[in-house]
Image (cartoon, rainbow, N blue to C red; front, side):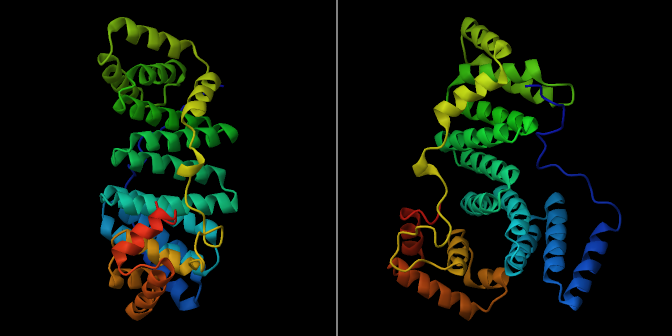
Amino acid sequence: MALAAASWLGIEEAAPPAPGLPELYEDNLAAFRRAGDLWGEAWSLYSLGSLAWAAHRDEEARDLLQASRYRFLTRGDRWGSTYALHNLGLVLSRLGDYHGAVAVFQQSLRACQQVGDRGGEAFSLHQLGLVLGLREEHGLSIRYLADALRVALEINDDEGAVWHLYEMAVALNRMGRNDEAVEILAHLLQTLGPGYERDTIESALAEAAAALPADVAAAARSRGETASLESLAASLIAEFLLASEARPAPAAGDGQPLVEPLSSRELEVLALLAAGHSNREIARTLVVTVGTVKKHAHNIYGKLQAGSRTQAIARARALGLLD
């Protein structure tokens, strides 16, 4: 399988917006609000949130993207909500809110699977792998990355496959499996075109090789240079592909282990509670009153048979309703 050249490692980098673009989106948002166009409002909030994220104004980006997601869902556009969720997860990760980021990428994964967006599915799996790596849960991280690799190969996304393989090599190196990391990175260097960030791969390869005896590193490099992408990927997927118990929690109504399942809105509130948001912050995100949030929280506690927020979150995680 040939690998096309592209820029792929700099997902957190973005070019400055064109002059006047933020003002244009603000004007569009105001116009859509006047017209009562909820979808246009959602898209404008997403655009403004993405610009704020690119400018590293992360708290502002978080609020805008949360509001965008809510409006997409209110409008009934689950696929549109994944755009906001993807960037929201990136924002939360950069803010160091890894629990919140995992919850958001779990939501985006379920949504992409439900609407049949395979590319979005691979993206969500990959980001879950990265965030779990930041939490130093490398074993689970690499299994999500392997699942992302599987999806990329199924949809013939060569660039995505490279991205997933690189991060799998990084995870393997952190796990002390340096020879496997060398094999993957050597394969990438052997097959990539000139448009890729080869310096980054070469640096990672040198780091992994330095942890090995010279002959072991040389043998691993030779294996990687002669392997095909298909054989290398098949071996990694067979070893690391997510076990069923590690897959994301089911969506509302899909087999929740409760006598009275949580509603979709209660699941939203639960995820925000688990991410550490206050009732007032949740109310602002969902555009409801604080009293409404408290009512949802009361219902959640009752259904989970919990006496506090901490107990509810622990019970929800034990039942697979949260990461």
